[in-house]
Image (cartoon, rainbow over the protein chains, first blue to last red):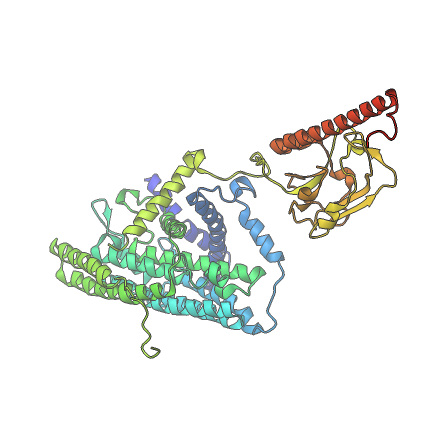
Length: 396
Length: 201
């Protein structure tokens, strides 16, 4: 019995720690202090995770290309982010003469602040959510949309053609995929019946035998998750959808004109967006902080949440090491001709699933619809168009 | 089907990722300052001056003809000719450079000085770690810094060096044979009575 007691305490250790710290204050200040502590924890934790991810990404990409990756600074190169941080802090901060200085300065701040806001509604463990909002999902997407603004602010204010091209690509891409991101999340909302993220996790935190009720283990959930993953990759400007940066053609796109710590902030914002979007994907489809098997439920919930997020990050890095960049027209065709129609169909299938009731029939019907649609839509929607020799109609 | 190629590619990269920890042959990286690959024989970076024997000043092959100085495209060579002469490898008295400077920061490693040198005196080195903290004096090499023994030349470019040696030996033999015949002729001339004057037509 004492054993389970230890595990419940370990599970709630951060909540208990917060309550203990807040206990030193007078009663009236306690709620506000609790929130401030939560904010401090998030603001410290995720940049730390970002630092670790940068070095692991570089090492992982190296290994994927049969290289060693960074191994010079500290043991196994683990202190590389410290060296990078010192470097970017001591670099000269160059602002182009013709840039709009105010907007140029604000853009990285807007990005980082907007991304941090998203973490407020993510449940990172049992009872571990900073603000338990009824419409948390909506809040998350509203904050996610603000990143587009910051990217365009950066591209426009730099007054540089590469920056502007990068920003325009970014906005086109992010708006196209934002739709998909939202619609694939709507499927989850239809089943869970709530926009509150902790409630969505609770709905998945049930077990049949030892297997959990995660949404990814249903036909509509799997399809939704795949679409969500595609859209999330595009939203965070990760390879193969990294056109807005396009190092090889746009010399880093919208952050061409950023140097020193402003550039580091963009980098930070990009990785934080990756964490938050992975966290949301985990919450919506992978059961949030719930354990993958019922007998593993004694392991603290936050460990499960963060391992799922880091696993998604690993897949992001793995994809970056594998896939080449898409062309702009391929990107747009893919979004509007395949991903979006498929997500809409998935909404229909989700409704079918909801109203067909329990039983094996809905498994067969929903899986069949989605499988047929996948094959047909990839054949028809993504068919390659063969252009013949070019004809000039008026210039004969 | 859509996604098949992506899965195939991801399997390939996963294979790279895991196998690179297992098999060392997969890793192409050479961790440079600690480990090095042996220099390729054809590698050429920066010229040096060859000398024969043990003393770099006495054995220096350069005769200060200044052809390399004139041919050098970025004009990084500076030579001062001596007033007196010293014997070269074949024993012939030649001028020598009292000053021979090459500016490392200007040299573009084109090897034209080597190609134009008629005395096999300047050759290319494969030493590439030429960085220095002193960017003014440290980058201007004088003749002592540039001097390298013929043995060193053999160690850097063995094939080319033995060809050069063979050529020089042949030349030396020719010179010696010539001087010998000249000496013989002179001796014969001295020994033999003078030919009758006004003979023949």
